[in-house]
Length: 255
Image (cartoon, rainbow, N blue to C red; front, side, top):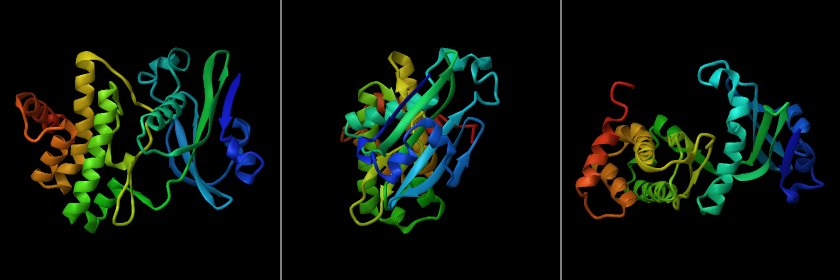
């Protein structure tokens, strides 16, 4: 059994034919960006637009992490969570990639394969690449303040709705080139809703993921400004101080 959706605006064009169904998407060839035991990502161009095609297949090599093969029947497939979370971001007015097509195929009730196709966000670079090449924008206080404030708003919007990204790394934040940066949040197959103490732990993890790279490229004052923007305060209270300590210690001994 298969389910498939693609953007009706693509219907009749070259891109529409390329993304018409799951079988067609799995036959596409393009520049391979990443590949692991669960998925691969291709970059291809159709009608002057570039698209990322993420294809999931199989159940992974690590049996323990994949629930000894039972995940394909008992848990929502990662590909489904990925497109559902992108749709949530659109609903929450969080800038993200535009979906061009998505769907999956099941066999005997178990997940077999699936794909998500997103349109490339032009003129953007992920924050991790900027950090790797020591981009001069990271030394521009005005630029950093604008980007930091947008990331803080995105994180707070998700967390206020009991949702956590679970991989809120700099590589999953795209920023537009130019003097007026706009931040986009992408790639969220692990995001989900949490409650109570589990939510608070996951929030700390999200913020610690951001600080994992931030501590090497931002000043202490910039990191504090990010947290204050996130918390919506002018100064830290006692609860904030406890949370900040948890954030900065989260990855101790694991880096």
